[in-house]
Length: 235
Ligand code: PXP
Image 1 (cartoon, rainbow, N blue to C red):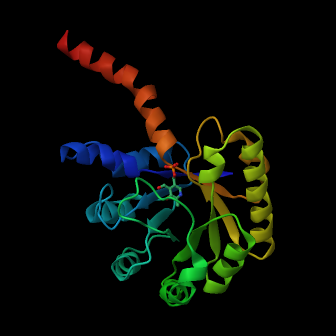
Image 2: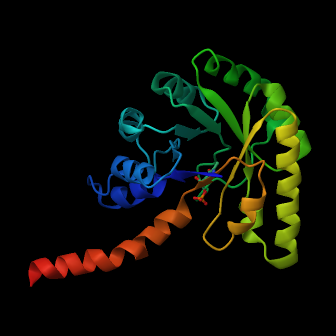
Image 3: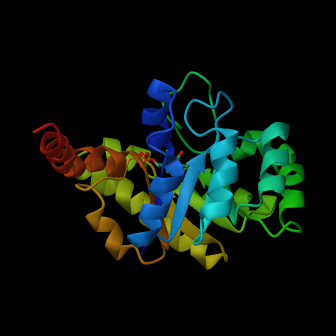
Protein backbone atom coordinates (compact mmCIF):
# COMPACT_ATOMS: atom_id res chain seq x y z
CA UNK A 1 0.00 0.00 0.00
CA UNK A 2 1.34 3.41 -0.97
CA UNK A 3 1.29 6.55 1.15
CA UNK A 4 0.39 9.99 -0.20
CA UNK A 5 1.23 12.78 2.24
CA UNK A 6 -1.01 15.84 2.55
CA UNK A 7 1.12 18.88 3.35
CA UNK A 8 -1.68 21.47 3.85
CA UNK A 9 -0.91 21.97 7.52
CA UNK A 10 2.69 22.93 6.91
CA UNK A 11 1.14 25.90 5.13
CA UNK A 12 -1.30 26.42 8.04
CA UNK A 13 1.66 26.87 10.40
CA UNK A 14 3.50 29.11 7.94
CA UNK A 15 0.43 31.30 7.43
CA UNK A 16 0.05 31.78 11.19
CA UNK A 17 2.99 34.25 10.97
CA UNK A 18 2.59 35.31 7.36
CA UNK A 19 6.24 34.46 6.69
CA UNK A 20 8.07 31.95 4.49
CA UNK A 21 8.69 29.15 7.02
CA UNK A 22 7.87 26.34 7.17
CA UNK A 23 7.70 25.95 3.41
CA UNK A 24 5.19 23.30 2.23
CA UNK A 25 7.33 22.64 -0.85
CA UNK A 26 10.35 21.75 1.31
CA UNK A 27 8.07 19.49 3.36
CA UNK A 28 6.82 17.81 0.19
CA UNK A 29 10.36 17.12 -1.01
CA UNK A 30 11.27 15.65 2.37
CA UNK A 31 8.17 13.42 2.32
CA UNK A 32 9.16 12.20 -1.15
CA UNK A 33 12.71 11.49 0.01
CA UNK A 34 11.29 9.42 2.87
CA UNK A 35 9.26 7.26 0.52
CA UNK A 36 5.90 8.98 0.02
CA UNK A 37 4.43 7.94 -3.32
CA UNK A 38 2.65 11.24 -3.81
CA UNK A 39 1.96 14.68 -2.40
CA UNK A 40 -1.54 15.96 -1.76
CA UNK A 41 -2.57 19.58 -1.34
CA UNK A 42 -6.01 21.16 -1.13
CA UNK A 43 -6.34 24.58 -2.75
CA UNK A 44 -9.38 25.79 -0.87
CA UNK A 45 -11.66 28.55 -2.07
CA UNK A 46 -10.57 30.77 0.86
CA UNK A 47 -6.86 29.82 0.43
CA UNK A 48 -6.62 29.27 4.18
CA UNK A 49 -3.54 27.06 3.86
CA UNK A 50 -2.11 26.25 0.41
CA UNK A 51 -1.85 29.35 -1.82
CA UNK A 52 -1.72 29.58 -5.61
CA UNK A 53 2.01 30.19 -5.52
CA UNK A 54 2.55 27.05 -3.39
CA UNK A 55 0.69 24.99 -5.96
CA UNK A 56 2.79 26.36 -8.82
CA UNK A 57 6.01 25.67 -6.90
CA UNK A 58 4.83 22.20 -5.88
CA UNK A 59 4.10 21.40 -9.52
CA UNK A 60 7.67 22.26 -10.47
CA UNK A 61 9.29 20.46 -7.54
CA UNK A 62 7.33 17.22 -7.15
CA UNK A 63 8.85 14.16 -8.84
CA UNK A 64 6.36 11.52 -7.64
CA UNK A 65 2.71 12.46 -8.13
CA UNK A 66 0.84 15.65 -7.34
CA UNK A 67 -2.76 15.20 -6.22
CA UNK A 68 -4.70 18.46 -6.19
CA UNK A 69 -7.74 18.28 -3.95
CA UNK A 70 -10.32 20.80 -5.03
CA UNK A 71 -13.94 21.80 -5.11
CA UNK A 72 -16.00 21.62 -8.30
CA UNK A 73 -15.77 25.31 -9.25
CA UNK A 74 -14.93 26.98 -12.56
CA UNK A 75 -12.01 28.83 -11.00
CA UNK A 76 -10.40 25.64 -9.69
CA UNK A 77 -11.05 23.84 -12.97
CA UNK A 78 -9.07 26.50 -14.84
CA UNK A 79 -6.24 26.41 -12.29
CA UNK A 80 -6.04 22.61 -12.43
CA UNK A 81 -6.00 22.46 -16.23
CA UNK A 82 -3.21 25.05 -16.26
CA UNK A 83 -1.18 23.47 -13.45
CA UNK A 84 -1.51 19.89 -14.71
CA UNK A 85 -1.21 17.80 -11.55
CA UNK A 86 -1.10 14.06 -12.26
CA UNK A 87 -4.39 13.74 -10.38
CA UNK A 88 -7.25 15.85 -9.10
CA UNK A 89 -9.49 14.71 -6.27
CA UNK A 90 -12.88 16.40 -6.21
CA UNK A 91 -14.16 17.09 -2.72
CA UNK A 92 -17.25 18.82 -1.41
CA UNK A 93 -16.14 22.08 0.18
CA UNK A 94 -17.91 24.27 2.69
CA UNK A 95 -16.30 27.54 3.66
CA UNK A 96 -17.13 27.18 7.36
CA UNK A 97 -15.86 23.61 7.81
CA UNK A 98 -12.55 22.90 9.57
CA UNK A 99 -11.74 20.09 7.15
CA UNK A 100 -13.58 18.14 4.45
CA UNK A 101 -16.59 16.70 6.25
CA UNK A 102 -17.68 13.83 4.05
CA UNK A 103 -17.89 12.38 0.58
CA UNK A 104 -19.18 14.05 -2.54
CA UNK A 105 -22.98 14.05 -3.05
CA UNK A 106 -22.72 12.66 -6.58
CA UNK A 107 -26.44 12.12 -6.98
CA UNK A 108 -27.03 15.84 -6.54
CA UNK A 109 -24.14 17.03 -8.72
CA UNK A 110 -24.14 14.30 -11.37
CA UNK A 111 -24.98 16.42 -14.43
CA UNK A 112 -22.50 19.11 -13.49
CA UNK A 113 -19.85 16.50 -12.75
CA UNK A 114 -20.04 14.94 -16.21
CA UNK A 115 -19.29 18.28 -17.83
CA UNK A 116 -16.74 19.25 -15.20
CA UNK A 117 -14.67 16.06 -15.57
CA UNK A 118 -14.68 16.00 -19.39
CA UNK A 119 -11.71 18.29 -20.17
CA UNK A 120 -9.36 16.55 -17.74
CA UNK A 121 -8.85 13.33 -19.71
CA UNK A 122 -7.56 15.03 -22.88
CA UNK A 123 -5.29 17.12 -20.63
CA UNK A 124 -3.74 13.90 -19.23
CA UNK A 125 -5.06 14.53 -15.71
CA UNK A 126 -6.62 11.64 -13.82
CA UNK A 127 -9.83 12.35 -11.88
CA UNK A 128 -10.69 10.85 -8.51
CA UNK A 129 -13.85 11.49 -6.48
CA UNK A 130 -13.88 11.57 -2.71
CA UNK A 131 -16.97 9.54 -1.85
CA UNK A 132 -18.70 7.63 0.91
CA UNK A 133 -18.00 3.87 0.74
CA UNK A 134 -21.34 3.08 -0.96
CA UNK A 135 -22.21 1.16 -4.11
CA UNK A 136 -24.35 3.90 -5.59
CA UNK A 137 -21.64 6.55 -5.19
CA UNK A 138 -19.11 4.16 -6.77
CA UNK A 139 -21.36 3.42 -9.76
CA UNK A 140 -22.06 7.11 -10.30
CA UNK A 141 -18.34 7.96 -10.05
CA UNK A 142 -17.56 5.55 -12.87
CA UNK A 143 -20.49 6.87 -14.93
CA UNK A 144 -19.34 10.44 -14.42
CA UNK A 145 -15.94 9.58 -15.92
CA UNK A 146 -13.75 9.24 -12.82
CA UNK A 147 -11.10 6.50 -13.05
CA UNK A 148 -10.40 6.49 -9.33
CA UNK A 149 -12.32 6.87 -6.08
CA UNK A 150 -11.07 7.92 -2.67
CA UNK A 151 -13.18 6.22 -0.03
CA UNK A 152 -13.96 8.46 2.93
CA UNK A 153 -12.55 6.93 6.12
CA UNK A 154 -13.62 9.77 8.43
CA UNK A 155 -16.49 7.83 10.01
CA UNK A 156 -14.22 4.82 10.56
CA UNK A 157 -11.75 7.11 12.33
CA UNK A 158 -14.45 8.55 14.61
CA UNK A 159 -15.89 5.20 15.70
CA UNK A 160 -14.60 2.74 18.29
CA UNK A 161 -14.80 -1.02 18.88
CA UNK A 162 -17.60 -2.93 17.15
CA UNK A 163 -18.91 0.14 15.36
CA UNK A 164 -15.46 0.79 13.91
CA UNK A 165 -15.25 -2.83 12.73
CA UNK A 166 -18.60 -2.43 10.96
CA UNK A 167 -17.39 0.73 9.23
CA UNK A 168 -14.17 -1.01 8.18
CA UNK A 169 -16.26 -3.81 6.68
CA UNK A 170 -18.30 -1.23 4.74
CA UNK A 171 -15.05 0.23 3.38
CA UNK A 172 -13.70 -3.24 2.53
CA UNK A 173 -16.83 -4.17 0.55
CA UNK A 174 -16.84 -0.82 -1.23
CA UNK A 175 -13.17 -1.22 -2.16
CA UNK A 176 -13.75 -4.71 -3.56
CA UNK A 177 -16.74 -3.51 -5.57
CA UNK A 178 -15.02 -0.39 -6.92
CA UNK A 179 -12.03 -2.43 -8.05
CA UNK A 180 -14.30 -5.04 -9.66
CA UNK A 181 -15.80 -2.39 -11.94
CA UNK A 182 -12.37 -1.15 -12.98
CA UNK A 183 -11.80 1.81 -10.69
CA UNK A 184 -8.56 2.49 -8.84
CA UNK A 185 -9.23 2.71 -5.12
CA UNK A 186 -7.57 4.87 -2.51
CA UNK A 187 -8.74 5.93 0.96
CA UNK A 188 -8.32 8.77 3.38
CA UNK A 189 -9.42 11.14 6.11
CA UNK A 190 -8.77 10.82 9.80
CA UNK A 191 -6.30 7.95 9.42
CA UNK A 192 -3.60 7.93 12.07
CA UNK A 193 -0.89 5.86 13.78
CA UNK A 194 -3.45 3.97 15.90
CA UNK A 195 -6.16 3.19 13.35
CA UNK A 196 -4.23 2.50 10.12
CA UNK A 197 -3.10 -1.12 10.76
CA UNK A 198 -6.30 -2.93 9.57
CA UNK A 199 -5.97 -1.23 6.18
CA UNK A 200 -2.91 -3.37 5.39
CA UNK A 201 -5.31 -6.27 4.80
CA UNK A 202 -7.51 -4.32 2.38
CA UNK A 203 -5.43 -5.10 -0.67
CA UNK A 204 -7.88 -3.44 -3.08
CA UNK A 205 -6.90 -0.08 -1.58
CA UNK A 206 -3.76 0.99 -3.42
CA UNK A 207 -2.95 4.09 -1.43
CA UNK A 208 -3.87 6.02 1.69
CA UNK A 209 -3.86 9.82 1.86
CA UNK A 210 -2.80 11.13 5.27
CA UNK A 211 -2.16 14.66 6.46
CA UNK A 212 -3.07 15.78 9.95
CA UNK A 213 -1.69 12.78 11.86
CA UNK A 214 1.69 12.96 10.14
CA UNK A 215 2.13 16.72 10.57
CA UNK A 216 0.96 16.49 14.21
CA UNK A 217 3.42 13.66 14.89
CA UNK A 218 6.23 15.54 13.16
CA UNK A 219 5.93 18.36 15.73
CA UNK A 220 6.85 15.96 18.52
CA UNK A 221 9.38 13.82 16.70
CA UNK A 222 11.13 17.04 15.64
CA UNK A 223 10.71 19.23 18.74
CA UNK A 224 13.46 17.49 20.71
CA UNK A 225 16.16 18.28 18.15
CA UNK A 226 14.79 21.77 17.50
CA UNK A 227 15.07 22.76 21.19
CA UNK A 228 18.54 21.19 21.56
CA UNK A 229 19.80 22.97 18.46
CA UNK A 230 18.66 26.36 19.77
CA UNK A 231 20.26 25.66 23.14
CA UNK A 232 23.56 24.71 21.46
CA UNK A 233 23.57 28.11 19.76
CA UNK A 234 22.66 30.26 22.76
CA UNK A 235 25.08 28.48 25.09
N1 PXP B 1 -8.46 12.92 1.76
C1 PXP B 1 -9.23 14.01 1.56
C2 PXP B 1 -10.14 14.02 0.39
C3 PXP B 1 -9.15 15.12 2.42
O1 PXP B 1 -9.93 16.20 2.20
C4 PXP B 1 -8.24 15.09 3.48
C5 PXP B 1 -8.10 16.28 4.39
O2 PXP B 1 -7.56 17.35 3.68
C6 PXP B 1 -7.43 13.94 3.64
C7 PXP B 1 -7.59 12.87 2.78
C8 PXP B 1 -6.43 13.83 4.74
O3 PXP B 1 -7.12 13.79 5.96
P1 PXP B 1 -6.30 13.90 7.30
O4 PXP B 1 -5.68 15.26 7.34
O5 PXP B 1 -7.34 13.68 8.35
O6 PXP B 1 -5.26 12.81 7.27
